[in-house]
Amino acid sequence: MQVPLEHLRVSLYIRINQSMAGSNFIDHVRLYCKSGNGGAGSVHFRREKHVPKGGPDGGNGGRGGHIILRGNKQMWTLLHLRYQKHVFAEHGQPGGGQRSTGADGADIILDVPLGTVAKTVEPEEKVLFEITEDGEERILLQGGRGGLGNENFKTATNQTPRFAQPGEAGEEALCVLELKLLADVGLVGFPNAGKSTLLSVLSAAKPEIADYPFTTLVPNLGVVSYRDHKSFVMADIPGIIEGAAEGKGLGIRFLRHIERNSILLFLVPADATDIQKEYDILLGELKKYNPELLDKERILAISKCDMLDEQMMNEMEELLPKDIESVFISSVAQQGLQQLKDLIWKRLNA
Image (cartoon, rainbow, N blue to C red; front, side, top):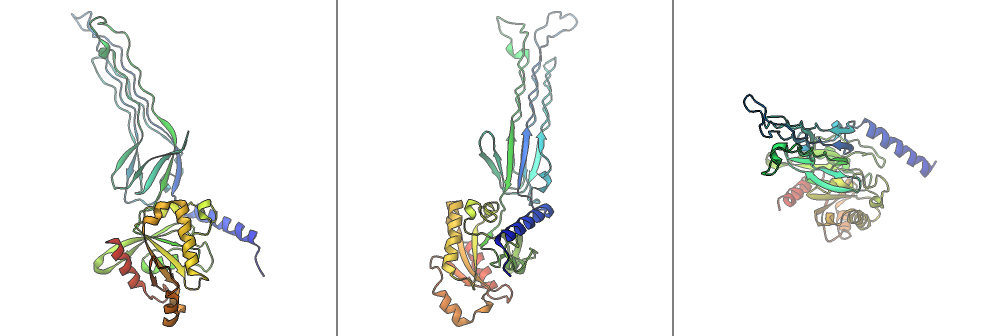
């Protein structure tokens, strides 16, 4: 009995929401942020014994606290910020007499994983910066400057100024933090092409594996061991379908994760009706999403080749795309995997 398409869509929607709810992988958060106001300058005059009419000595106000993002290579998700909807930095303190400057407001430092992109979304979406190095600190919102005290406004014609400068207001914005995974190799393919199986065989990662499409609902990272204790990082993202760049399937939610990969490893199963056509569709979706992705190194792996004999592989090889290096592999039968790793390592160090 054939299951109606609408039932499949509902089932997929339920599974996606259950997976997201129970998953520790969070790659998108929205935060309302406000940096601290600067402290006001002081209006004060020197008053000491035997100095009844001293000049102005009001100090400056302190700077408002910044909101800062700091790269942390030990983190790989934005989970810790998922429920932190508001981030407010401390205000600067006002200046005092005897030229004393007010204390600066405490900065708020948010640790984020490498590959985090910071954006503002109101009044218009704008990319601010990207964190790519461990320990890198970038100011998300600048704290307001402290106001000048009345000592700074003393002139030859106005030796007793009775005014000071107020502190500047801090910045406020609705900010979005998006994570783009930093990996050497990104797996690209249709649902059920064998990406998760390949990652589980090559690394210690344990992604969910089943014989139905959209088993992978969140990206997975794995460290692949190579010769002489060397290694590289491989990322498995949920499967792409035709129209993904327009939001079909899981849409563009996870396509951004392959923007930071050095090599794109396309996986097409050996039992595909038309390997060239599937490869062209995948390439087309990446081009529509971001044309710069086509400048990356590409490798084509024909998966599930344990069902092919040598003659069938030779015949199929004639039908493969000519503009990309290809290799036949089988994750289950452990065929061609070393050849694939050699090819990846060669491209990474080219």
